[in-house]
Image (cartoon, rainbow, N blue to C red):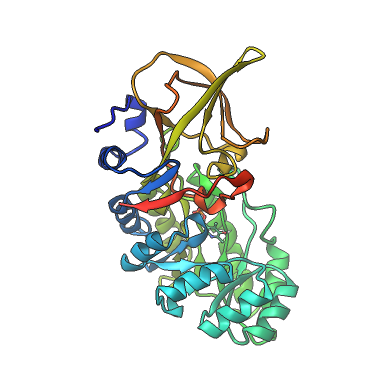
Length: 384
Ligand SMILES: *Cc1c(COP(=O)(O)O)cnc(C)c1O
């Protein structure tokens, strides 16, 4: 039975027509039980071919944590991207897929010993760091490896900031580069992360200015750097339009070729932008209730089994079946925990119980965050 969804103009600016129609077709024909995540392989391929296209001398390493589904990784591997990993679990999947170690880097500045040993024995040879204790670890368990320093940069333009946990300021960065060299490591470059879902193209500009300062001070200390890892952070559309990747990349390319030697290698580590807008969650409306002047709408995917990022402020777009009058809702997931509230004060239709809802841009940081809390299983990922 072909299901009829009420698609509004605002939805069409969020999701590609081709992705939406493929997913609706799949939902109508398959007997799959909700909730599940459908990923459009063509959209992933399109994104993979866009990112870094405008940056000369660049290599793209997909940040596996955004979506580590094996079929998604198999596709990304076929598309020729490299991978950025942080754990033995992520390494294991890549090893199962036969990905060669030259195509893998690890930019987690604090690696567990277990992971570091496994990654090194697999042949991974590019690691980030931002502390002296990590230099100790790397010089002991990954001697001679290529290392790059994580610089802290402003995360203001980002909806999912990362800068507080990682990164060092200039003086520490210089000291750490010198220490790495003195300990027999090969300090090759600088990395930063402007924050995930960064909607301000100027953030990369500021980060590159800071990188340039460090680059020059390193040279004065006899360390010739040759690589810049510009991290991830490219935004996707959730509710509103965002600056597009080609615009960000052209800007980055311009700055790099003005400020750095022309043979500088550029690493890029996008996660969200590769897979986020390829994915649509399919969920079912399981209940409605009125409590203390609030209308509550319950669906079978929530904070614990897929929509964790809603807690950090990511606001999704929803497409319901049928065209029904709208109301202001508190939208919640299926578990018995009061933390399981996806969004409050959101204007959505008044759907029938048992009808479906499509949650757009659900391909990144959803299933990878999901737990089986309260016995709700982790939703399946289906690549079409
Ligand atoms: C998570 C992460 C990324 C990917 O970030 P996105 O915002 O998803 O593009 C890249 N590099 C590092 C080190 C990360 O931790």
